Image 1 (cartoon, rainbow, N blue to C red):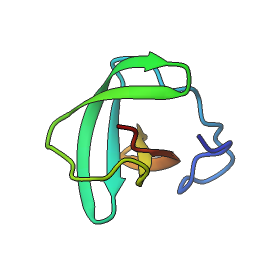
Image 2 (cartoon, rainbow, N blue to C red):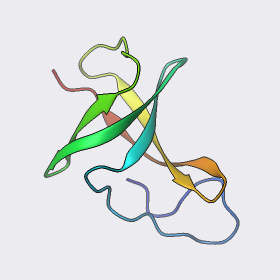
Image 3 (cartoon, rainbow, N blue to C red):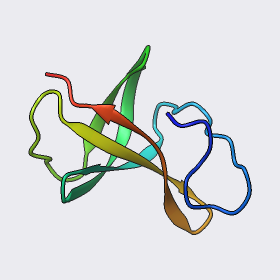
Length: 80
């Protein structure tokens, strides 16, 4: 996760991701939303609304609903 939220006015700190939190995931040009089912250490397990086609090791961006829009809060890697 980033230290600060990208795309908002001022300095907004990024809080840790919690279970049952909705997120938007971007991989290449694909965009899907999902709910965090399980958090174990730095890994997240998501229940996606649409399947996402990606290879293990591919990077994804992670967005959180802040205010009226989805804002970039970090990135991650797909694990097998």
